[in-house]
Amino acid sequence: MGLKLSKKSDIGVDGDYWRIISIETHYGGPNQVWPSKSAQPITYVNVAQYVSKAARDDKSMSLKVERFVFDGQSNGLPPEDPGYYKAPDYLPEPTREAAYAALKTIPFFQSAEDEV
Image 1 (tube, rainbow, N blue to C red):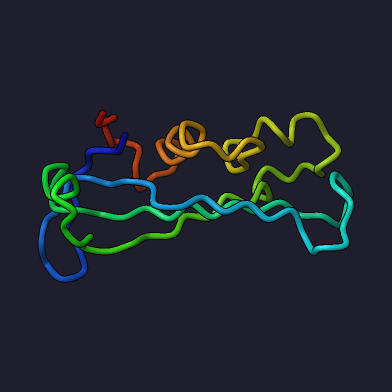
Image 2 (tube, one colour; image 1 turned 90 degrees about the vertical axis):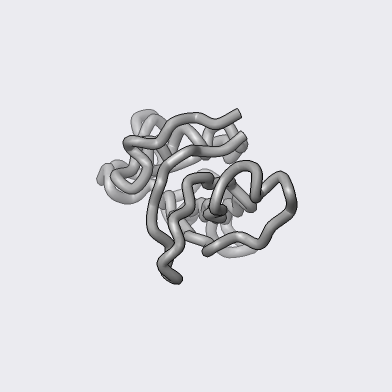
């Protein structure tokens, strides 16, 4: 699974295939109880850009890696508010499917198509 979106890479080569390479969610410091006012969830989604899906399937090197941050802060609601978990900028279940759906809500990927 990936996203198809043509963008020029930093090295000047066009790449049209984007794939999630990792999802990391942190819920605050190691001693914080979740949910709490002090525990601030943050999810990092790292996405690699390839020349094409065929290049990725052939195990070619990615053109670049972009990190997108979903921190649940821009909606202005506290974590104890039920609406907080409906914000598109927070991934309460950081699955690949949820991350791809969240990526498609940000301006960078709004015109991207699903690539299976």
